[in-house]
Length: 400
Ligand code: AMP
Image 1: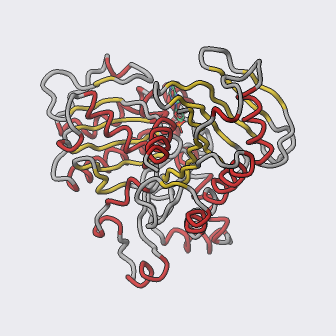
Image 2: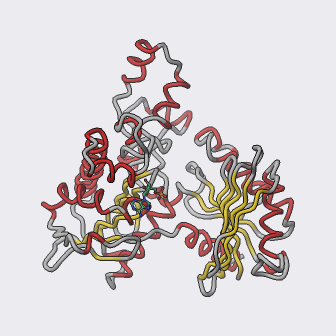
């Protein structure tokens, strides 16, 4: 089956066309600045160079049509016509408590997803615009929604409830949901596969360390805790997000700086994290590692604080599962950044991770970092969220 995987943001659309049988990516690309002056399409056929083209994309429907045209055109295409797209898999950020697994998107299902929009106002409406644009341009092609929150729906109440009046959960479903679920799912399974074990025998801590970052405790194949909460703001210090803070900071800063709640949320989401900690130097871990090596003190402390927080969450999740067999690192910094990994190494040594500094230099590959005699296997497992979406879409469409 040829599955078109779409990840639609408010002004962008990422796509991959995947053959679900061979699991090969046939083509992939990105539409940027949708609805803004200077829209740009980047497209890449498997095994060929990327091409970039400025094309007007006033809305998402135009962007979806452009993607289909590009995938079917003689020069850039990999399929003969739209008929060769068997299904579309959409990344949907928030499924609330309504979706514990992927689902065929019908009008009724879309209404339920829309009801989750106020839980993820920055992401869900954009995801749904993508779904509607596809339905319009590809009538009759089955669409599947794969939710970032679904994998974490197995968390027990003690992990997902906040210590606030229970009525807020009853009235508004204020609770922890967790995100990056497709990544935590894929990486935990793949880690077990690499080790020749069944995921149902292992206690795995997955650290998804990208620009957005989260840690999860995956006990015998099920998520039992994760660091993100009602929204992706909770937990680790991230590229630009603060992660855990004392909520009283909001009132304190509102008074001192005369800021509104909206302005403060913008600061916590976009101007905090390692960007804020490095005194606005950069949110990018590569820049920070370079600057730190050249003596930039703020960059050094930002990286240390980042790694320290990840280390503390690992300790907490080892406690949550009463043990840990595997620590799997993934996403941009987890896969590629040796500096971040070695800083983190100091806080997990006591578990018996025995990280080999030579192996730690490897980038972007599946690699077991732990040397001989380690008690907890620490490894890098590059994530592949698009593949999970393609697999889920094929599974749902085939089981109809
Ligand atoms: P993501 O959100 O998963 O794309 O991760 C983005 C983060 O990964 C950025 O802060 C990058 O600096 C970091 N990253 C990506 N590639 C590399 C690399 N080759 N070396 C070091 N850091 C990297």
